[in-house]
Length: 323
Image (cartoon, rainbow, N blue to C red; front, side, top):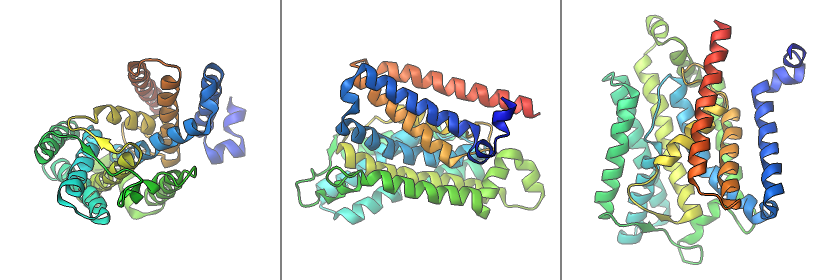
């Protein structure tokens, strides 16, 4: 095992990422053996569609968890963004580009709200995110009068937004997601913003005593998260078109599972954007695999919960060994 860890390639790529890729490949092979339709290109596109919007959620929460915080409101906030912007489109005739900006703006506002309460009012992130989850559900229901919102189909005049996910059989959404993931990786690993965010998770008090404005950088992590949640809403409706008020909770767990599985520590101070991307594809593959096998979706919830527990447990073990 030590020889494997000391291998130059393993050191450069990371043992955790290599293991995750192996898990992804094994899962795909197993699902393909039990369900021949899993090899179809339409099934692959379905997996990629799911991974895109979930990926933006996971990228956003990666920044928050890196500070030692948490955000359980990302799923409902995503639905709130999609419902409010979609209602503006369908009921008030707002053009598509401003509608997309509205979606991102709503997510940004929630990011500012969450970040301000956590950083400047010192309210625990868990409490803030629970409050935001309820506020987002209530706000979306009030704004849309508790009605579901169906975005335009691809055949309509404003249906061009669906090309964000795919053009013909080309998964455009995958390339956009990977492009933004690269930008997030650069921000987290190569910029002052990322360094301070990671330092906050490692030892916030030490960073504060060194003269850094910790509140500013803590709030920045939530703002980044909120912005990415607003983008996730656009990709969700691009794939599924219809959104209902009061939903979105399940995507919290899936996004956090992909993030933690990818190597981001729940204790903060350690984050991996590339690991998050691989973790998201595992979650998306699991979701589609369960549907392909004709199993109840509740099994996915059970497995996702187990994945979160296992990932956090191994993270705790790793930190104990280092200490």
